[in-house]
Image (cartoon, rainbow, N blue to C red):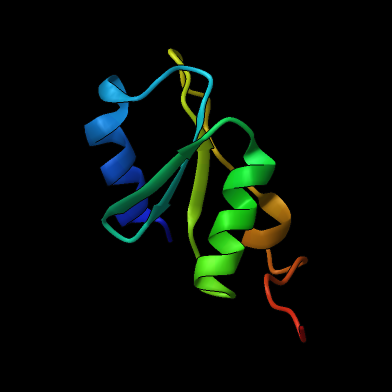
Length: 80
């Protein structure tokens, strides 16, 4: 999951402003935002329940994980 989005991020990371948040869907950079809330809101409005990646641009990256989602404890679906 998110292989395309992570590949896009890795490819363009050096051109992005540090500290900003990027919204990536598939193989496309959708936008750069000042806050994670702005990026998530834009992603939800544009893509609804489709998956998209929001990530802060940092000089040193840490591993991304969501154990609850990976283990099926948390489901990323909504009735709204």
